[in-house]
Amino acid sequence: MSEQIYKQQDELAKLIERHTGQDGIHTTVIPSLFFSRHSTVTGPNHGVHNPSLCIVVQGEKQVWLAQEHFTYGPADYLVASVDLPVIAQITKATYDVPYLALKLEFRPGQILELLSDSEIQVGLKENTKRAMFVSPMELCMLDAVIRLVCLLDNPKDIPVLAPIYTKEILYRVLQGQHGGILKQMAIEGSYTYRIRDVIEYIKNHYNQSFKVEELAEIANMSVSSLHRHFKEVTAMSPIQFQKQLRLQEARRLLLTESTDAADVAFRVGYESPSQFSREYSRMFGFPPKEDIKRLREEYDQRANA
Image (cartoon, rainbow, N blue to C red; front, side, top):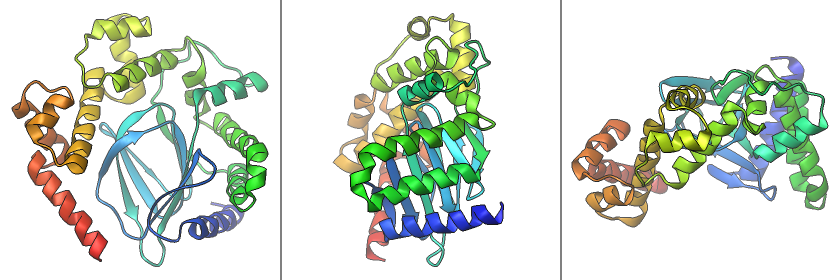
């Protein structure tokens, strides 16, 4: 990275540290902007990565999308253009130099507005590509991000300037080497746009069984075309995608509601508790009961540290 980028990273780190002060995920008065601070490395965390731009200012993070692995730190930024079930892990963080990062969420409508306002050329039939990518950090993007974060000290300016700075940041992503991935997400009729509709359907009906023919009809594709494009976008099949959503929700229910594993299995759509237990163990490394006990013990240890 250039010396200028290092200076801006340092400025941004100081801003995030000032607005967080303690470990955790922090919301801001800009609804789409979130900060993250961690003074230790973390174990693998499962979750759904929503459409967003993520910038690590200090430390390093790794993200797994199915079998694909993404690593990014201060020299890069990561973008997810659709909702994706992932595993994430902070791999560099210390008490003296904590992991500091920000996430800026966005909507397809914001990308479409940008495409309408600019002269960026878009091809409807561009090849489908993975909906997650890492790109090199650029000075012009960091400059816009710092201006956006500085608005937190001037809340009265947020309604007018936050949308402008956000638009500038997203424009820089569109102009970057993987900008085409973001374009396709917003263009009605593109393969990625249609796969996004299927993802939304699976998210809203994750606990219900479905026929692949039904998903193909939603996407207005043949079954074989749906499978091919869905895997190109998400790195997994529709069934694998649904399974990840089911198991993540099951883990959340077991942690928050202290309910029976068999009951949770039925609630998230499994007909067989034994199959649920097998797939849960395969995904999280432990059977449900043992996994939840382990997670609660880890939480208690951190709380008492």
